[in-house]
Length: 154
Figure: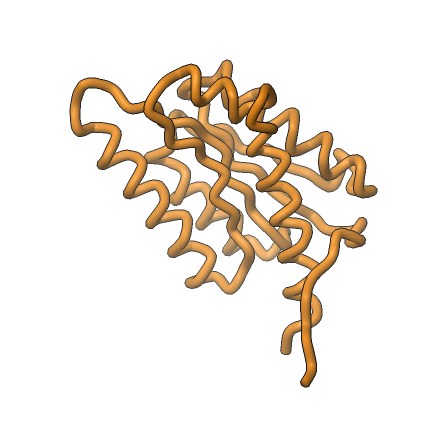
C-alpha cells in the first residue's frame, strides 16, 4: 500500500495571509505566531504576503482573489469572531468558514481556516498564544504540510 503525506520541509513556498482587522489585538498575535512558525521551518518573510480585510465576513473574497492569482501555494485566513448577545456571531462565523472552505475546493489550493470562533474574549486570548497555544502557528503548520502534500499529489 502506498501512503502519501506532507511534511514540514518546504522552504520555498509562497503563502498569503488574509488577516481580519476586527479584534485586531487577538488577530495580530495569531499572525505573529504564524510568521514565527513558518520562519522556524525555513520560510522567509519575503515569501509571505499579508492582505488585511475589515472582518471575517470579507475573508472569502480576498482569499478567492489571492488563490486565483496563481502567485501562492497556500492562503491562510486569520481572524477572530467572539460571540456577543445577538445571532450576528452565527452568521459571520458560519459564512466565513463556508466561504474560505469553498475557495480551497474551487481553486484547488490549500486555504487554511485559522479563524478563532470563541464564546468569550478570554478564550480568544488563550488561543492566541497563552495557555491553549497559538492557533495562528497551528494554521501555518497546516498550510506548510498541505503545500508539501499538494506537491506530491497527481
